[in-house]
Image 1 (spheres, rainbow, N blue to C red):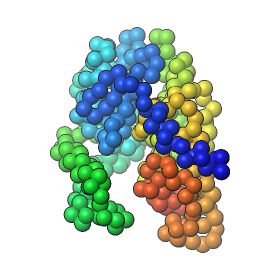
Image 2 (tube, helix red, strand yellow):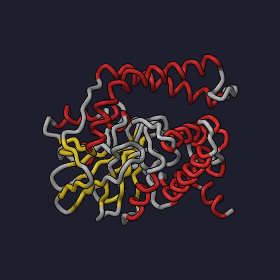
Image 3 (spheres, rainbow, N blue to C red):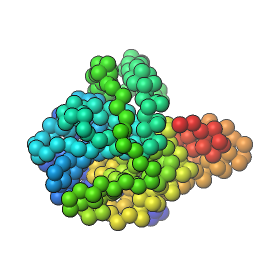
Image 4 (cartoon, rainbow, N blue to C red):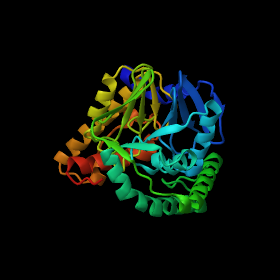
Length: 344
C-alpha cells in the first residue's frame, strides 16, 4: 500500500519540482537557472521537449534543440539575454525530431564551427529515419486531430468536454504551425560522435557524456555535470511514461540503474519539470520492470501482442503522466522486444 501511495504521488512531485520561478520566459519556454551557469529550458504544455544551456568561461554548450527551428531561435534569444559568449557545442541526447530539428538554427546563428555531438548510433538513426519522420508524422497527426475534432469524440470514443476540445484545437494549431515550418527544416546530424564516453574539459567544469546502452532509443546520451551534481537525461527520464516507438524496454532498466549510480541531486529531463529527488526515476524503473515481467509472462503463455495489452495489468501506475495514452504502446513495444520482432 505504501509503494502504491508513493507511485500515485509522482505526478504531484513533478509539478512541485517544476515550480521554481523562471529566470526568463519566452513564448513557449521557461528558463530557470539550476546551478551557476546551468540553465534549464522547460517547454510549456503542448510544446515539444525541453533543452538546456551551460555557460562556460569562453563559450556555451547547448543540450537538445527542440522540434522547430523557430523554437531553437527562441532558446538562442534566451541565451543572448544571459551572455554574449558563442555557442560552441550542441549535444543531442538522441535522434528524435523534437531534440534535433533545431540544430540548423545554431549553425545559422553561430557559424559552421558549431560542433554537434551525438552518440554514434543516434547519428546513424537520425540520418536513416528523420526524412521519413518529416514527411509522414505531421500529416498523420494533423489528420488524427482533425478527425477527433470533427467527430466530437476522443481516441476512446468518449464525447469531448469543452476543455478537451480546447486542448485539441490548440494542438491542431501547433501542428499546423509546425507543418508550415517543415519546408525549412534541414537534416543536420552530428559532426562529432562518441561510443561510450566523451568529456568536454571546460575551464572549471567537466561536461561528461555517457552511453549506457539501448533504452529510449539505440543511442541515448546522458549528460552529467559532476561538480554541480546535475544529470540531463533526454527522454531516458521524463515526468511520466515516455513514447516508446523506438524503445527497448527490456534493456532500459539497466540504463536507469547506471544513471542512478551517478552522484546527482538535480535532473533536467527531456519532458516535464526539473526534478530534485529520485522519486520519478525510481517509479519509472519499477514501471519498466513490471512491464517487462508481465509481457514475458504473456509471451510464455503464447499470447499475441493485442492479448498481452489486455492481460498485462499495470494499473497501479495509472497516476503516472501519459499512462493512459502510452501504456498500451509500451506493452506492444516490450512484446516485440521479448519475442525478437523489434525494429529501430
